[in-house]
Length: 514
Ligand SMILES: [Zn+2]
Image (tube, rainbow, N blue to C red; front, side):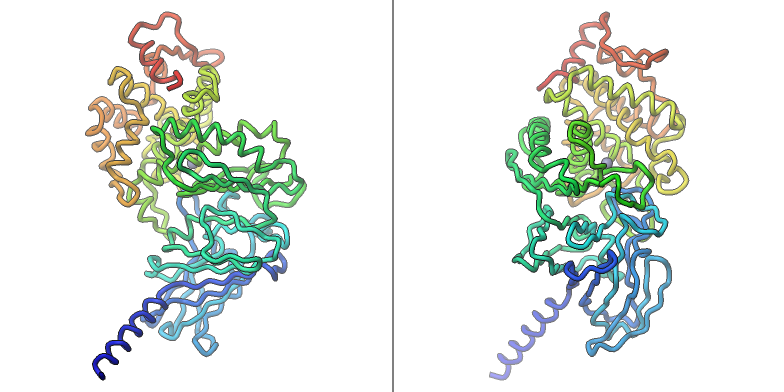
């Protein structure tokens, strides 16, 4: 009897112990004052005498220093009895808590970023908004912190909310009623990968093949509606499904759009807009304009964010997948993560008939013009990438220009070498199979891995034009697909009427609808 009882007790203790090993956050969306949120964290058990509580310095996908700690104030650490523990802020993002074996609770206040007076370097699509009764954007790195060495523990986040507020996210709350939502996130990466937009719902859902797609819109002057965007995105996603071989890479996806009223105060550089990718969602900060002025931009940028599922959210190096939130360590391969995503976002549109061939070529022509006139064309792209958050921050924009052109040339070159049978999307598909979501490559292995899946010539291209400093001879590579590049006067890519048989075959494989 005794033994059994002991066993029961130890099982109970064990369950209790593992139950306690999670973060339990509570956020009050009902009592917002001065665009500030009160956050309470019941901490997991700490066994060291001191522990560091951090907000991120940098997050995946932004390639810039964010310093979210700037927006945290009144941080207090408490023991079980509610007695304060010593806290010392050691830098903008980190607080050292002493006597941390007794730590039970941390409370603090979060100020929003969209309209702050503080100067900062955070992109709007990675920022927070806290506007009472209207809209709350939970870009989670701006709201939630973590304890050092405890990033792998699960997070439970409870929001108490006004009755008319709806949570838009790719994650479904495990508990939801008119006043409360509870979300469970498997670890810190999952938490920071899951934005939630709260507000009066303008949402719609569409089903594309295997994927349930949520479209959520905040348009303060009701200029643009979720249903309208859903119409545009449905043909894009149908095209994406076909492009990717008949199946979308996720069963659930959320597009979250925040449209900025041009009359409202904001803290970003004038004209700054953009979007940020996540594994099963993307968040957009865009100007609130009449829909006809926004349509093609929204389709292009939504396509870009969606295709990030492939790169880098499936195929990436250690720097991306084992992400360090407090020390910027970037990968050399932004040409793959941003460049090839940008290329694919447009290529899918010509392959599915949303764009004509000439519209697609015009987009690429503009990228050549921008890459050559606005950026340093002899800077090694791997170096630009590695130091995109620091030394080469000014060159970062070239990942969307030359980065996309690198992918375009690789696509044509692969089709040329394989007689139209194996293009860039086949290569990324095979890299995805090789590495999958859970594994990563080492930066310096990538070109060898690509060579193994394709041709030695492809590795030579990457070594010369991506790792090296030689500008890409666009006329040569586009010429392989029977496309002429007029480098003088109006820079333009046009079909070459004198193209040979092989070039025309490559052109067909490259541009014609599947
Ligand atoms: Zn991107």
